[in-house]
Image (cartoon, rainbow, N blue to C red; front, top):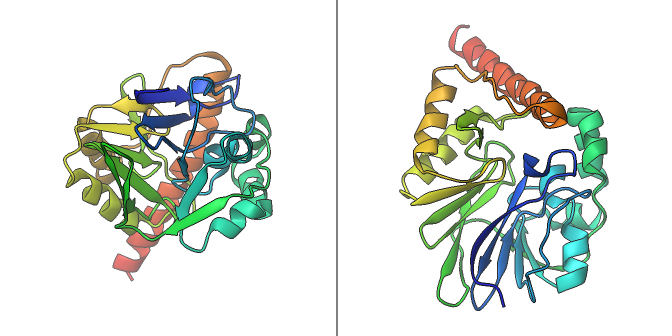
Length: 259
């Protein structure tokens, strides 16, 4: 029987910390995000898993979902109208290859998932036992993005950036809805979490939220993160994509305000 909170690297062998999945153990156990298909995630400590929350349907968050559901018969929580893309992930895989290129091959293809899906729109509260899990709709990074708030800890998926070696990084691939992204970020800040679980960075201080907001608003979002080796190469490819999302969003914003 598991207990407590677990931040589990769920990226590929080349860069396990590329993605983190989180497990909160209670009467009902929940996992937030399911890593990549070629994941090195070790969830062997789990004797059961009642829920898997999909914060959004990008390849690095749903890759191992099918395998996990087959093993634990978990109920899958996903934004309303989007479970069909998990049943048939053709679009998820196609979009990933277009956006990430060779990195998508390192992560592996998402397999179809047959599960008991619980579609949500935000605002729902799910009883886990001693804790309650609140679903928060946090669009911007993707229109189908949700975050969860459990016992004062915010699990933000990709809606609040990432963090490596103490450096906040943007998680903003195109097409980015910058206005919604900033609104979602401020909404999450208003919850005053005691910690934040970043899909790209693990558990961090809540001060990260303000740091990330500042880097986006100041447009000082290009960063240097020294990881070394193939991990740094993978992160660099992600960052180039994320910079492109911000550049396109700001270009569109500047054009509309200066006709």
